Length: 126
Image (cartoon, rainbow, N blue to C red; front, side):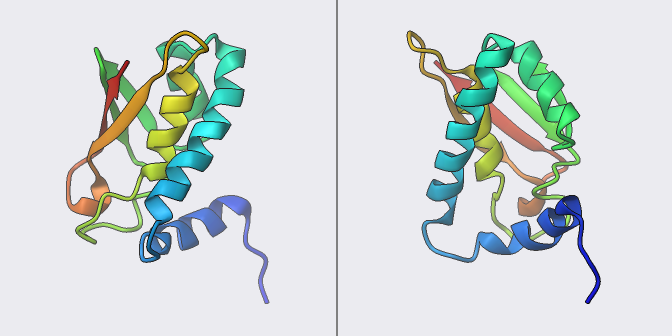
């Protein structure tokens, strides 16, 4: 049996998680908890979200006002044309990362590579 790196394991397994009922809610919640913890180290700023997303190799990010565009999403790039939006973990991660005690952020996935779109796109609501 060959060993898989963590990156390869994620690339291989994540696209199939969307098949299980309730997985989007669970992944969003896990992402949000992780984002809250890491976000405090970056003062919950959008610029910090861009840095950590690229440092963790989750994809290449551009931010336009309240819109996050994620190119080459680690979560969706191997699941093209499934007809589903599957970047729930990243949506939760971004929401947690941008949330503070005084300001709650919510992030909704609007487009996804796995859905057949050219990139993943998220809208931020405060």
